[in-house]
Amino acid sequence: MKGNVTDQALEHIIIVGGGTAGWIAAAALGKVFKNRAAKVTLIESEQIGTVGVGEATIPEILRFNRVLGIDEDDFVKSTYGTFKLGIEFVDWNCLGDSYIHPFGRYGKPLDSIAFYHHWQKMQNLGKADDLTAYCLAIQACYQNRFTRPLNIANSPLQDIAYAFHFDASLYAKYLRRHAEKNGVKRIEGLVQRVDLNPDSGYIEQLCLSDGRELQGDFFIDCTGFRGLLIEQALHTGYNDWSNYLPCNTAVTVASKRLDPLPPYTRASAREAGWQWRIPLQHRTGNGYVFCDRYIDLAQATETLLGNLDSEPISEPRAIKFTTGKRKKIWHKNCVALGLSAGFLEPLESTSIHLIYEGIAHLLGLFPTKHFSQPMVDKYNAMQEKTFTNIRDFLILHYKLTSRTDSPFWQYCRRMDTPPSLQQKMDLYKASGRIYRENNELFGEVSWFAVMRGQGFHTQNYNPIADMIDVNSLEKQMANIKQVIANSCQTMPNHAEFINKYCASSTER
Ligand SMILES: Cc1cc2nc3c(=O)[nH]c(=O)nc-3n(C[C@H](O)[C@H](O)[C@H](O)COP(=O)(O)OP(=O)(O)OC[C@H]3O[C@@H](n4cnc5c(N)ncnc54)[C@H](O)[C@@H]3O)c2cc1C
Image (cartoon, rainbow, N blue to C red; front, side):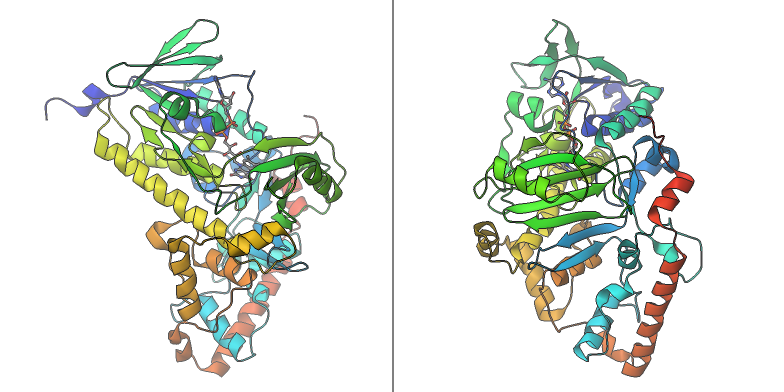
């Protein structure tokens, strides 16, 4: 090879869009390119605004925060954040039923196999307590307690996995400060036209409504559902997954702060979808995600307002979407991130994670001005896997319902199951085994929690569990339960923890 790859290095990266996706991309690229040759510019338009939702996360956010060098208390304080230990699913299997998908694990591995195999064995023998008694995260949710992991040997308090709830607009502002500190330039402006090279079809420049023109060699489309570059200019096409994930509208409203302050998101199934409740320090985020084939916006709004746990403090607002993903998330010299790449609906709070994953894959496959096609293909294949794995996990919640009380739930029970998901369900039913395929986001605990929570039971388990004598196992499980109950008692109340370390200012 002649010369150095840096001879071909990108000189100007342009991010279009200043929502969560745009500022995540800007913060990450700002960190990488600080004091280096490539210039990073972000264009956003106040005239258009952001989607204004996306307030619940999963534990992978901690990795991103660490990479950026974010001080966690400062971050929680600045975004009116709270802590999250899991998601409570209410009325999903049948009316009156509820379960928690915890971030932490159940019990602890015994004889090198996961705890749930031992629990299943003892459950079959009528010697196991309710599964929730063996999970610290679930017990802490029930008691509104929280602490960060503590350095105590052999204690479940060592392994606390958590994420955050935060105010979406403040999150973008927070990241903006990081990005600008690292040299990212922000331009306020409305992109009106995207000019492509007539021969290559690559994006050459963006024309703003005030006549400014902006040339770059790599473009990141963070324009939300519009997909201004990836779709409107490059016409990459969209895989519509609404046959599997039929919800297509959300109506949202803010309500007053909850007291006590739960350290978890709640997702309550409703007649034609589900309602979220996200506790923040200064307010509660609420939304009804529904399918408009079964109810209209007025009915959904009435249901949402009739099922709030605190007094509403904003006007309801509707958002339309189609679940699915772009056929090519990277095409020519443009990568889509955030809603412009696709949207799988917010049931397991995975969209912001998909942005981190998109940017991490991009840094791993960072291009030169040559844009090698095998690298682009690799990126698209990785994104396809990531989206599909999460899609399957989301479908599981709907498909396994026992509800027959509305046409929406009847549809969900009857709908097709993707073969990739069916294989997982069959394996579990036949053997009690769950495999994390291709390093997918959700691991054994998550799949187990949702399959059991949705009433998808098996009596099968890994026969290695039989290597432990029943009496000995009974004692070990009783001990685990006791340690969890005791550990939970030592955890502070969630609101008190926040007050001590990261309370937001009362003035906004
Ligand atoms: C109902 C709902 C609930 C959700 N809940 C969650 C959740 O709990 N957890 C989670 O992880 N995710 C959630 N998400 C997803 C999350 O909101 C998004 O992934 C995240 O906000 C990123 O959005 P974005 O930045 O891609 O798009 P937007 O926020 O829509 O930002 C688009 C940006 O592009 C700019 N723009 C557009 N056109 C132009 C133009 N022509 N010129 C200049 N600028 C332009 C806009 O000004 C804006 O700055 C939810 C989404 C929805 C719809």
